[in-house]
Image 1 (tube, rainbow, N blue to C red):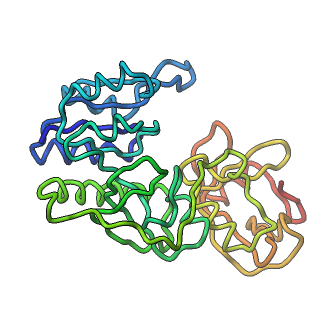
Image 2 (cartoon, rainbow, N blue to C red):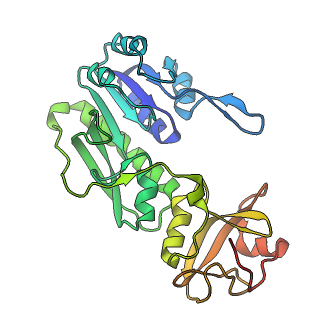
Length: 301
């Protein structure tokens, strides 16, 4: 088929690769405009733009698709379908209706649970036992379209980064399956009950909230790994926590209980396993304490 691909972050790259490997013609790849990144703040293309250009695929990076000129340029591609994976821009009705088969979106949740921008992180934070990925026929509402095919997976102790990789690979496989025979996978309306929303993660949410139960704090660590990175502050320095375990312990929330950096929570305690100081590499908690003392009785913010 003639496919327009629309995606931005690393999550979408395996999908693009799978479409190319399956023999589809990617007529154009759409991605969000380059952003300034790194210490030099140089303009950096998105992972999808970089991959598409490496594959020799024409790319477009409009700021918006709302104006008539951008919509006409999209329609002029005469695509059979648009495949959307974490693109990040709203698709107007004129864009949704332009391809022969419409726009198919890979959404990383079991719809209608976790409609919105951060379904993987919200599923972990909520303590969901499982999540998944689905191929949704897009319509004007926020992730309200019917689903053609989906797959489930247990969350277990996975981080957001690990789930993202897993669901991207599964979503790519599902998309190739649907495009191989769209008639065999008709769109099924989402249930009317069980709707939840997954708003974008705010940076402030990454600060560990020790007033919560220990299991909820540990989920914060996994939900914000790798980004934006869960953290606490001590002595004016921010320490990121990459992994932690729930342990026994009682005390005022945020209080360090022993020499192993056990931290009291609203119920129970957590013990960071791997951490990172600003400007340093990831290290074991014991290594951190040898160079940055956090004595028992300290209160972390």
